[in-house]
Image (tube, rainbow, N blue to C red; front, side, top):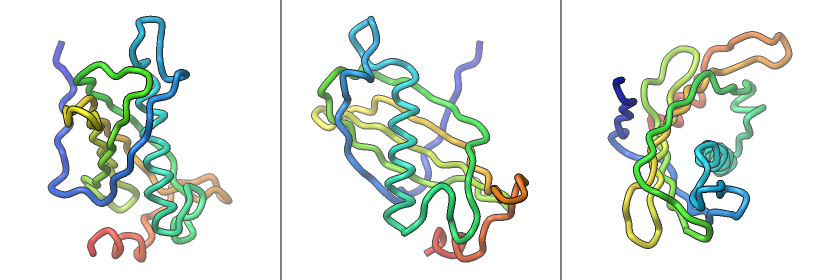
Length: 141
């Protein structure tokens, strides 16, 4: 079976650190496979907030996640500090891909790579929307 490959963007737009909580750990004693995606959601919220946006209001449009992919690279344990870097790939008329790189704050080793496909959405009409031009401009600065 072919493995998922996620390329890193040419540059990252945002970074933040988070500590791994006990609720992120599974019965194997390391981070549960779904926990890294929850942490990526938090990273996305922090990034949007840093620009004055929310998932319900990016220049008047909302966003929804259309897909997700994860590459696990190393174990992560309770109390570990993770540095998340966020970048953008493949912007298009209706959305973009957000790529996240998670790095162990102590060793500097990459522990995971994620990609979430984001689509702009009009929550009033319940329809896919186009990317707001003002947001596209901010991405290109």
